[in-house]
Image 1 (cartoon, rainbow, N blue to C red):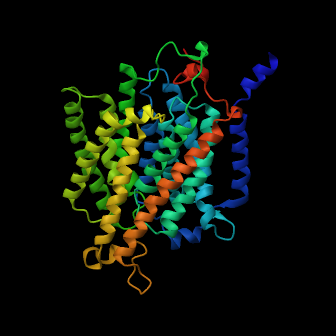
Image 2: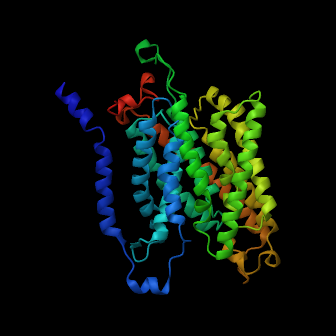
Image 3: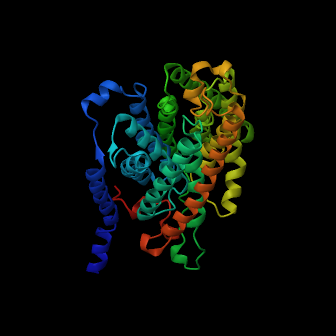
Length: 428
């Protein structure tokens, strides 16, 4: 009995152990730049985008996942924990590819990049919300950041693909990593009636749906900050902000119409909480390109329609196929992210120096004016490679991480422990 109690008290010990490993790694590898660096290289991120993205990560994603009737503590708490942990881990993993003299120099820009990378884990968390234990979430998050950082290096460093808002490397990757992990974590049927929940907790209450709307609204308001944060010129920043806002607005109007149309005249709160945001994902990779304001609105319309139809018809089919998707991340992040990736292929193929002027090389970094610069057709193929590598690495990595996390040492949940805060929290 004493051993059992001690075991429960120390169940998050691996978490603290990993934090201590991070302490050592930061002491060994991470430094500040000296003052002369900042005089020669002023900060390269747009004002306010770090703060806006930070709000999205900790408030937006957290509250969006509070819709389950008895899992709000875990949705908010584990979101906070995973973000705080993975931002540290991502800061290391992303910069291991570009170290200077075995040193990582931390800046506000690198913090923003780590913040954005943590979103991949939080998207994956949405797919397995209520289905994974705390230790399982930890191991999945640690593995995911490593693979996601590798994929980001391939997308931006090797393929030199345009993906300023992260719809390919962040949203698409996080969604399909999460779906693959969900498939690998799926529960075996058991004849033990004691493990069968007496009440289905995989659903909302009136109050939990209202709190989830807080997350939706915060995400909606700050999404232009997320998409525009890593733009390189004032013109790009302005286009990214305007295009993201217009796409979000169009997706919202479309969501309300389509939700009512497929639900006999009534609105479904799941659609309103999520599909209204799909425009921000769908325009993310192309928000700094010359898509025209009308194009941004059209992308939002397409994203809203695609997302609502996914929630209505595709999510139930995935569930029947053994791929639970608690938050429907395929509909908010996966399919709109793929749409954005396809649009980058088309727009890269059409990009010309005459159309973009001097900003062509800042948007498509490999399309320079010298002889080594890529042609538009070649850039389009590299955009396709970026989408392909993202989906492939996400599916393989998510499946492997789910299989690893499913082992007994990471305390998989029993059937009657799913979607329930009682296992991990002192409840009032």
